[in-house]
Amino acid sequence: MSVKVAMLGCGTVGGQVVRLLTEQSGDLAARIGDDVELTGVAVRRPNRHPDVPAHLITTDAAALVESDVDVVVEVIGGIEPARALLVQALRAGKSVVTANKALLAEHAAELFAAAESSGADLYFEAAVAGAIPLLRPLRESLAGDRITRVMGIVNGTTNYILSEMDSSGAGYAETLDEASRLGYAEADPTADVDGYDAASKAAILASIAFHTRVTAAQVYREGISSVTPADVAAARALGRTIKLLAICERVDSEGAEAVAVRVHPAMIPRTHPLAGVGGAFNAVFVEADAAGSLMFYGQGAGGAPTASAVLGDLVAVARNRVVGGRGPGESSYAALPVRPISRVDTRYHISLDVADRAGVLSSVASVFAEHDVSIAAVRQQGRTDDASLVIVTHSAPDEALRSTVDKIAGLPVVHDVVSVMRVEGEEQ
Ligand code: HSE
Image (cartoon, rainbow, N blue to C red):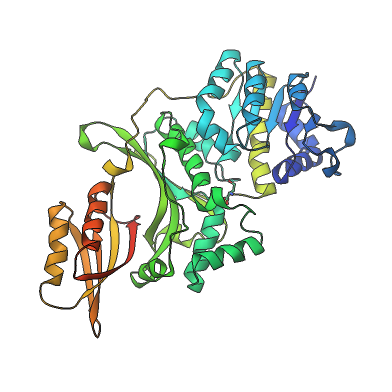
């Protein structure tokens, strides 16, 4: 008897999975306690996979899932047909390993229910932060702890673009063009630059960390397309840099515990460990009551790194089948409410061009007071005709901060709102 594996999809990640499965078959068999046999690879265009033995290639994914296989590995991406095929596999008792973050972030409940109905395994380490072991530590190693916050850089494309903007001072559009030319950005970069990819990953992280179902639609999302060279310069002037962060928090203000999940660009101190994460790398901070702070760092994308995570899951589910056990299922018992960004405490950096005359600072400051927003730091620099005013707030509900900025923008003494950016990674 061997563990029979079907693959759905064979692109950048799938090709590497097939290679590693073939090259390391002896070691994998020793680790699992049984041989692993790849019985089929379902693809859309059969003639595009010269490296895969021809007899394994099929275009009929549903028939492959239905065939006599133990494990289905899905690396097609997107919602359909992946959703239907994986539900079919799980209901039939086949273990599933998937790298599909969009699917997990939207349809986790349906997939876990299908897995539960048959007792099958559903593993998806590769869906978040590529090679970095992150979901298994959250799901298993930290299962005895109380996680309070997960914050990190989970999208390599946007991290590359922001790192380049920071070092060159160039604008967003030209940096994106360069990233596309060099192969760091996809032909259609929307999912990355508009934060959808990071929001899916944040939903998955929050669901596991807080034992609560969170979908991508519940994640507050802002991408990086509106980050300007003025924002980058303002951050630099204050010893900060801009990163697209995914932030999942347990919040217990307002007298009730809830979770808040958001993805947006934020200024962090250059001394913060996440500030040193350059190029296409990912890094995630986890804070837990007993464990304290943990940091996970590594390659968040790419064929071989992502295939490493897929293979790790494949070994785990194959071992479970060999010994007759099962990995952890969905844990959503806490069912905490998801709080909208408007009621989540954040901090803002606001950079303004203002008139340089008596009473200007006090009229700006009074708008903060009106909205019950406390100012943490102010820096004013006079120029010939006007002055640059930089204000960093203490934490306050995001809607109060937004309203403050809107009202300040309308003051006659304010000539220009140069930069508005949330601040993270330092004392409140
Ligand atoms: N496109 C993602 C990134 C990798 O740029 O990090 C896959 O999630």
